[in-house]
Image (cartoon, rainbow, N blue to C red; front, side):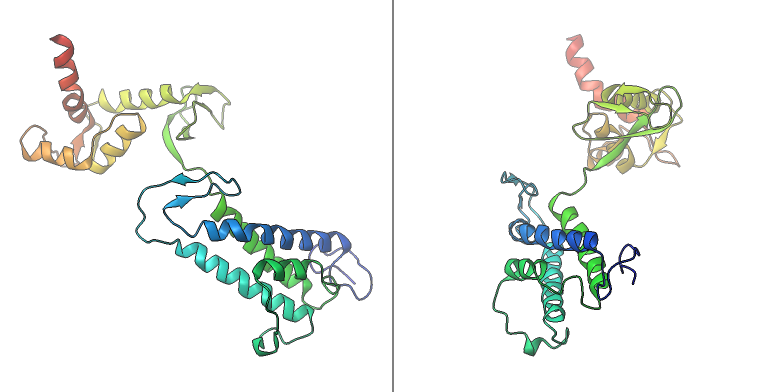
Length: 255
């Protein structure tokens, strides 16, 4: 008989092999540990930092709770109780015969230690479902770092990306290591020293923000309304916005 997960030959009467059984149980125990951080992450005004106890105040959210995390907890709870009914020989969909009063954490731990975890018929199927939920939980608790395009590589012109705290970037094509700020300023120079480079107010605001210069989309449109900034058919010129942006600083330095 083949393991339903890795397809290796396993003992008669077993749906998954011993290795997959250990992985299955380990994932269930890891999810049991993640229940408390998930509940802490429901508050959208706080970022618990995944499994770290440090809480970081974030910007005011559109909703008081994170609905995606609430849905994830409901999905995990329903799956864990359905798995327990299967392990206990009860119809997975007949919740009326489920007499368990334990909470989600206790149910996950009970499933991990159940004697029939490797032998019930749908072990491989539920293992795949649990693994998928575990990946979603990891993403919810420890979201991947936001990376944005900062400019091209000096050697091969490959577009480079970096996180907000990255000081150095390495080109994935030629392997050249460069300072992130240098790449940003080089991109800004390319945009602002060529009067043919045009863009919308939002595009210019975003490009300048990446390089460390703050100018809002509203400010750019206000400059146009006051006659300070010309608007072309294909948008505003980066160089015109740049001159207006640094103009006051240049005036102060001259004085």
